[in-house]
Picture (cartoon, rainbow, N blue to C red):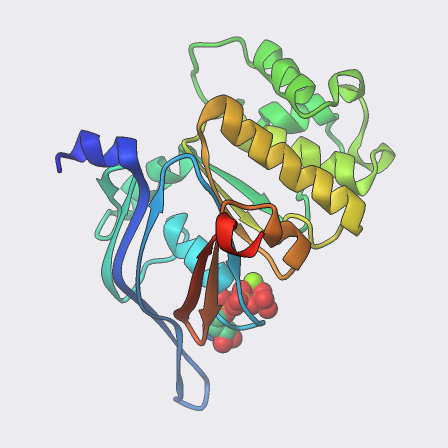
Length: 238
Ligand SMILES: Nc1ncnc2c1ncn2[C@@H]1O[C@H](COP(=O)(O)OP(=O)(O)OP(=O)(O)O)[C@@H](O)[C@H]1O
Ligand SMILES: [Mg+2]
């Protein structure tokens, strides 16, 4: 398969990815232990598993925020293991990140939060117009001038999702995006992510403890002690 064929079919291909953390005691924790997995483009995948099973570590490795000790990781046809620090910074610019804490800048309006990542960049589009379009896409067209403190938790997370989309990513990595939200609001967030996948073809990997969130995804990967313990498509468990 050529690189471009790869990019069309597979969003992520991990081969024997291992990440070890060393404790003060000298003990080793294998946060990711020989993970081999393929994630098809335009799918919404839930990463499940108990606390400490490696969900956040997988998202950080896939996001180029930390490097694995061994193994290879190909994202959108690009081998990201072995990239230099500078190349990883460039790689991350093309990803969307969504976290449990919405990480909005409190002094900026919703619109300015959405466009903040691209303010220092030269881009071919009108940043403000694109920011408004993205706020509309997440159902917040009328909240563009609100400060985060005036928005509900679900609205704040929708602003964070709009912000994640500003660079037109092919991959969104979301770590517990519904973790601070009540069940009903969490459901609307995951439905929003799925509808964004439908309209843009973006691939989304969601770390979550919440079975209701996971149930709405196309596929569930369960981690246990840094290994994949179960891999179930929607048709089996939905
Ligand atoms: N920066 C770090 N330094 C040392 N150990 C770490 C670090 N990050 C994670 N770990 C360890 O790696 C293992 C996996 O952690 P990770 O955060 O990936 O789990 P998780 O599945 O996201 O858990 P949670 O559901 O609690 O968020 C844990 O044993 C954790 O203590
Ligand atoms: Mg975590």
